[in-house]
Length: 185
Image 1 (cartoon, helix red, strand yellow):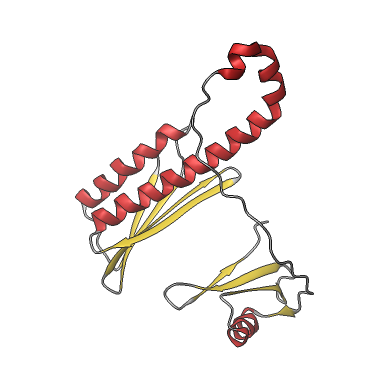
Image 2 (image 1 turned 180 degrees about the horizontal axis):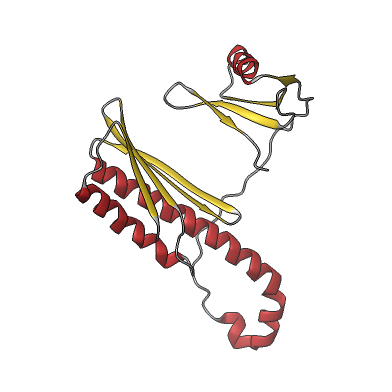
């Protein structure tokens, strides 16, 4: 596992680095191949120790952020959150493959197989779309999009970037600053 640990306005001590790497190694049991690029960012925000972990993978981006008074506790919390995300994702993938092969499996096992105990699976919440919106994306700069978002009182705003011509999203972060999401090439 390749882990890149960075501290913002915080010195990452050897013991802190070792603890984070040890806890992150628990995640390897969920994957067949070793994790290539695990990024950990540690910083202090309003007397809260915050740990952000990002694990880019093919077709999936795992990201979790947790804060606590103690940096070690924040690491524990963020690892628990990542494990829940991974289990949920794997459950979803397994459920889809079971639905595809379900008819074949039930017919081939006969009566005993049909009554066999199935492994317990976490319930996946049902997501219901209760509202749809359609609108034209007006070309504007990032600054204009932030102003528009603030005027509407929203936490995010989708717009067509006048400089690049691509669809972008600006959003308000927890720390009160703004973020920009751009498409990858």
